[in-house]
Length: 161
Image 1 (cartoon, rainbow, N blue to C red):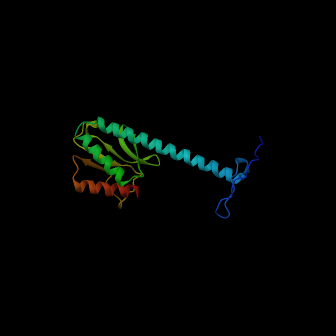
Image 2 (image 1 turned 60 degrees about the vertical axis):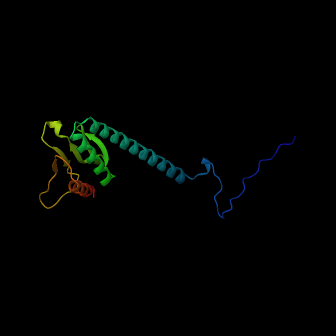
Image 3 (image 1 turned 135 degrees about the vertical axis):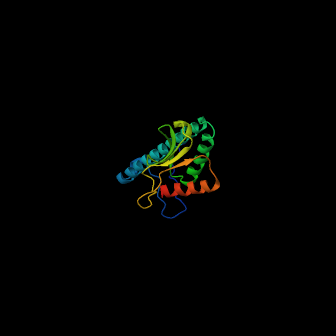
């Protein structure tokens, strides 16, 4: 038996293709760039996991609400997440809320929470709803019509915009 000599890998059909390199052959700058990208991917995975956890918590809280708060909460959740997908659902003082960069932009307060006759859709100061020297920051809800839903969708888009 004769020992075979290792063959060099065939060159790529494309001209100027870089040969396979080991980690020792990467430059200091390339290794730093790869470390940065790995950090970015870990951070992105953490954000996605946190968003999924927040969404699960919000949906679970909405499911616990008595009617008609549950129906309002479900519809608002669908409207807000469709109108502003950049917002992350989370619980805020036990209420469904929607945040950007960790700061709550808008929230839903069920009527039964404070034994009120109406639920509330509220906007915090991080919402971009400024309109002159005075504008509303919360809205009483007893039901939702198609016009109400359109108005809420537009408000949420403006709040994030």
